[in-house]
Length: 253
Image 1: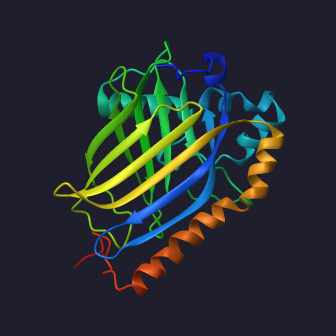
Image 2 (image 1 turned 90 degrees about the vertical axis):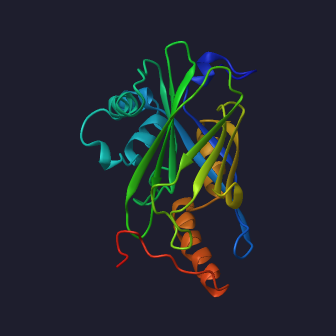
């Protein structure tokens, strides 16, 4: 479904998304914080041809850190194969990646999201690539997208350790809007239908121009370092509040 007020040509171009992320923990201790953030929304076809494209595409290509879990070769083909294996779906259109790229040779993405379309520009699948720290592990969740869904609602079982202050016995509910003028991603951690924790990402689309890129970098400097510092700073605050530490499942015993 093509978002209103955006042409297909514009929708098939890489862009920036800028906005705010909020984490809200309700149980066992309330803990809420938010900060400004921006992401690159990259058409993987443009990433492949970036060497012969504009300065901005070359900028992204040079600083993009390819996830090593997919091995060598074309990243788009790797995602197509992943969706085929997990969901038995064929992706024959563009694939977009919402992610951070390297800043001063460093990047850490708690989550990157692939939006996989067919040739009619219908969204068919979403792949969420989750990373943890300090273990430097990665896990992918693949979900199919139904037709004519304005806001996509996914329910999944948690099967990857992310936070040392959150156990594995949770379910996820993800609410994701179609990327357009705005983009919303909400993730709830549920236990017996009660929301224990929510992460909310609210973003507005910006055209990928040098001016907009410099604006984002000026308003939110060193964003990758800010993300990692924030993870450890908030972990310290949770510990000081007396929230129980949960060992990595593989390290227990």
